[in-house]
Length: 125
Image (cartoon, rainbow, N blue to C red; front, top):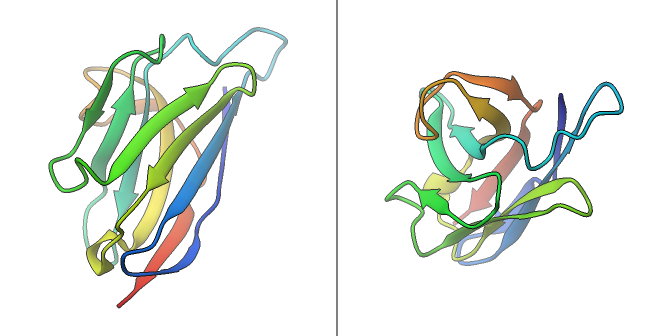
């Protein structure tokens, strides 16, 4: 399974940004919709932390308390794409954001089996 994240950039505090993650299988087999998927982030000098997750059916979502009510995780099966809509961003949201699929224990914690390369988000205050 390959994950390709994009959409990061510079955004002002209070603004919005949408991250995307295309999830594909190395072979012709389907990958999207077969694993739980999530977003993690790593701020400078800090450990990587859970941000949000979604079940393979796209019906159930989970969020870290720090982003609840501001971020929305979603997916589009037709496009094999996972999204993270970031609204009302704050300076403390500055981090490299990683998409991931197939957690080995539960969606809130690493390890996940598959990871994207990360996309950097910088929030200016």
